Length: 340
Image (cartoon, rainbow, N blue to C red; front, side, top):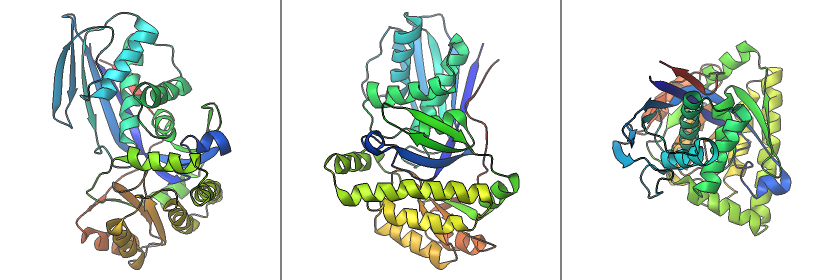
């Protein structure tokens, strides 16, 4: 028997950062994101030899461990170990023996939510294998709880919910970890137009998002007005983005992205840098009307809105900078599991 799972990565289009505590607890956050056909994959093969084998093929890591109720969180594939520990603690109450193989289409620190998406994919595989009674909200909240509480990893809430639900969603983040996912019924032709005009560029760099997010959290805790006002504006931009998509005013998205980027840079130090600024200026000079970093900032993927046929000039200009323009398509399907 083989159990498989895959969960989609996401593009954060507006409101990024307002899903991070303590801002979301104090003021409420709002984000608009869309999942794309790039995935995190998990495969479980049950064993009966009392061993646990963890294989991260994209990272070139492979560990064999004795099956126990709790695995040591020692810096080696902590995500997989943290998920296993929680599954045993909350559900099976006994050790499990299996081989877990994972792969992610984007590298860590890419800004596409790769770590959280991997957590959702692994949880999905365990849910499929053990027939756990978990719905979409349950899976997303469990993924968030494992990352943020059990493993102490800094970050927000949007990635887990995007990977679980899939599609284009307007998400609201309220106090006490309450999350409301509002799927948007965007007309197909408007999604095609957005997909056609939105350029995804990998800067060929990654960053440690946790350090940027910690600065953001500190700014809110310290009541830094500049940072908090920036987050207020980002939340407002997510509402504008939602209205533009639903009304088919797609070319407004470039302007919204540009305004969002100006505010995002005010949230914390390290979100932008000279390389990112240069890339942004190059895309704008080539015909883009707006853009932003996808994720916390500092590196990874950037997105640009290029209306009409300007994307070809934008792509040509970006390709000269040493990064890589990535082809993608939107997907409206969240975490998917099956057994062979």
